[in-house]
Image (cartoon, rainbow, N blue to C red; front, side, top):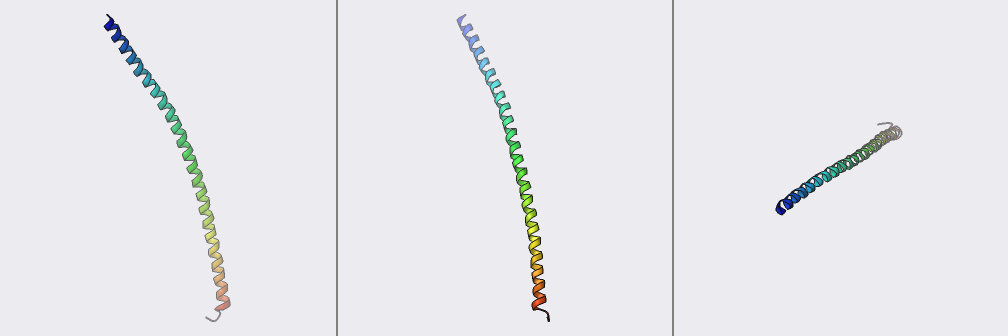
Length: 87
């Protein structure tokens, strides 16, 4: 009889341990996936902000390039009129 009671207690404790482990893993998995989703959202927000900033910088550089080109063309035109009249 003692062997049966010991066996039943062992089986119950093993079952309890397995169930406890499974429930704890489920909670940890839910917590981890929530944190992971939050981190992913933060990363996407930062990437969006960086993309906007890069777009602004590119627009400024394009504008700067156009302005520089106009200034150089005006300078060349003035130079040609002043120093290359007969040619």
